[in-house]
Amino acid sequence: MKLNPRELEVLKILLESERALTSTEIVNSGEELTQSTVQAVLRKLLAAELVEVKGVTHSGNVLSRTFGATKKSKEVLSRRFLDDLKNFHNIIDKKMLLTGLLDLEKDNPRIDKEVDDLIKYLNNFKTKRSK
Image (cartoon, rainbow, N blue to C red; front, side, top):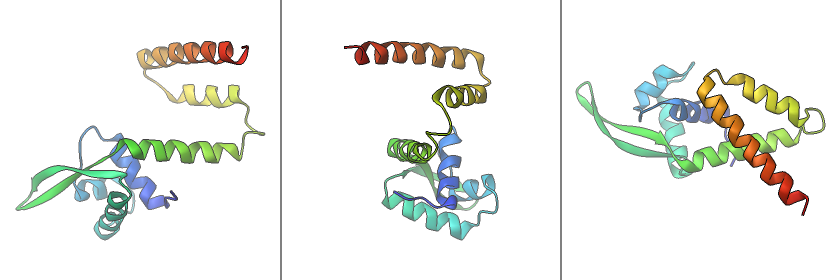
């Protein structure tokens, strides 16, 4: 699925949020987002099952739906990232890529767990390839 920059921005906001957000909260969290743009984006993302209505809340004097990203949205974004990466795989080696990704993480306990998970994955990968 092809996503435009506004759709990607709304998905990013929802994925980074620890709770479901109203369209107004999404507008306030983004750069140069308008209510009409967010509403249109949410309709498209709802139809594509990349976001879902999580609930209803009071927003001033009106009821507003709250939205959250679905599991499918992470899969779509991961697939898009990997498709983009394929265009550069001859330029950026895996060690450089992995170094860059790990340098993004600032939470030491989290990065330690991720490194341990990567070591397990790589050992399993190596074992399977040597068979």
